[in-house]
Amino acid sequence: MTLYFTKEEQDSFSAALKEVHFKSKLGFINSTNGFRRGNMHLFIAGSGQGKSTLVRTILRDLVFDKENNPIICVWLSEETIQEYRSMFSAGVPSDEKLLCTNAQSEQDKQDINEIYFFEWIDMLRPDVLIYDNITTSKFYEGHTPKDQARFASKLKHALKKNNCVGVIMAHADSQQSNQKGGLLDMNNIRGAKTIVNLTEFAYMFQTFKADKRVHSILRIAKSRSQEIVHDTYLLNYNPLTKSYPTDTAIPFSQFKEAYEKRNKL
Image 1: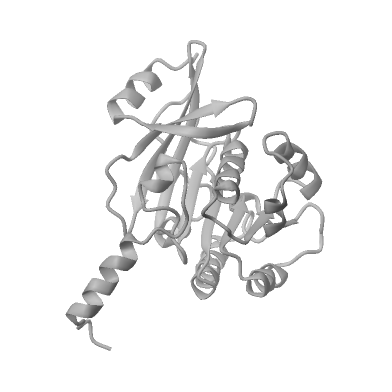
Image 2: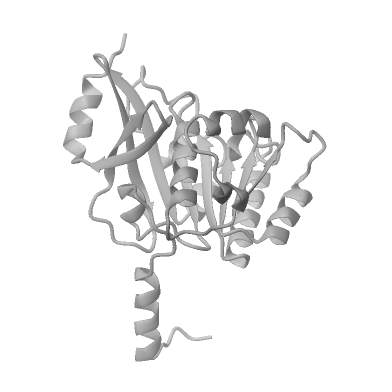
């Protein structure tokens, strides 16, 4: 096949890039015209940085937007489904919209395997797969870089095949911390770096305290198909919903100024 395209195909490609697949109230998601079907969206953060809160935020945003009616699959590697439901219920109402979700946990089924995982995706064909968290998953953690790369490639293929959004949470490596300082980047992911190369979108999430204020900052580090205007966002925490219901685009200089004032030894 050649790379030749007609004018009609060119117009079709351009329209497809501008199409919004899922509506959102969050600026960092809207900055890329929403989460993209068939694409990996990789979120990297250190331990205890608020990844679970961020996942609940994304799940709440997808389920309760009036224009979205997605089938959402949630794969958990660290919590049981009951533990996750307990935390999630503290921030959302009881609503039949949540019947569109299907959750599986590695903690509930100790003998669960990779074959089951991919068959589950192919059977349900979800609109969105939330993987929380790939770097602590038994299919990934402790495996060789070659096996991690193979699994990441297989996951990407499954998302493409099912035209599914992949929201994938990952730990930063232990060398990156608020005390040591430094800007979190994609190469700080725990384990093999292949998934960073494969993902179409990558987000760096850092939470730190400056004086008595907690700053939760999300930066868009990679956006393969979308032109973005703002790449740095302050996520505004609401203790009642235990989520970040809103975010605010900020200049990088504001993030840098706050980070330099963070509480440290």
